[in-house]
Length: 440
Image (cartoon, rainbow, N blue to C red; front, side, top):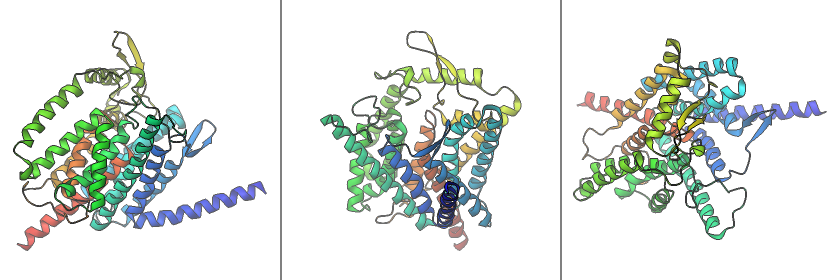
């Protein structure tokens, strides 16, 4: 009877999975809602284990969701008549990651290889999936609204945690480990809120946002500022510079202030130590190091001590599961062994997919920036309309922020959504320009 019950459960799960897969193949907003929903709930409820344990190996709900997403991406690719350059590059990186995983399972075992594979699957898998919807502008705008809705869920969790810090009453399910009372989210989680903010900011400044969008943008701006994550601030500064350059009315006295803020921000980020820092916390936050040079020292050590050793590894990367162990100096001049991720997604991609992978990723980001950059900075943003969140300007800013972010942080599922949106929208932008020229 137990065997029959297990078979029935597995059969039902299979049917449900196929139904979800069919919907996700047709509706990008549903696929993104699944991924970001799981992402937001895991942030809001860090005390809940969303998965099952199979011996020493944990299988999370996110793993099942990404399996469906990757299957949907493959199905959509088979249906497409033509693959864009960005989609081809993203699929190339996915193939390199899968090959690295296969080599890693053989060399280091399933658990070690899969643990390193997860962030690559989350980012590149989501990017490839979203990039297949290159002609569905309306649906892509729904994705932006799903993104903002998920950020609003995380924002509620932040308010609850701040209330808990003030009152001393913090339920176990929502309590996270903080490195300061006000910093109740990690750097990547705060960056997620910053993404949502810059979906809203262009519309807010152009007075095209709905009342709830304006209120949410104001709350997110205050929230991201108070969460005090330096790398997020630096990435946001790049976004604000673009906003000001796009709007002549905001120029004048604002531009010198932005230039001064950029200089001060660079000094703070690259030179000044973080008072809450400690090398033992490097796995949690890239700002938890003494200085930027401390991190660079770790990257150099990683490349020389545990990096590619032969030409094939430089070209295609080392197997997943190889680890990121390196030695760095502490503030007291002692060597300290670190085995966390390198906190540079460029370096991380180089180590696991080689020069081919990091070049392909850089090309995807570069193509998006080139195609989404308005040819005339004083002209209205294409697709701008009351209530619409997906614009060339917002996507350009978000990709620019990611280019900055990847220098000192690992990519996440949410950033894969943005990269895929940018790849799809940039293709549509090129098509519109070609159509406009042929009609003249």
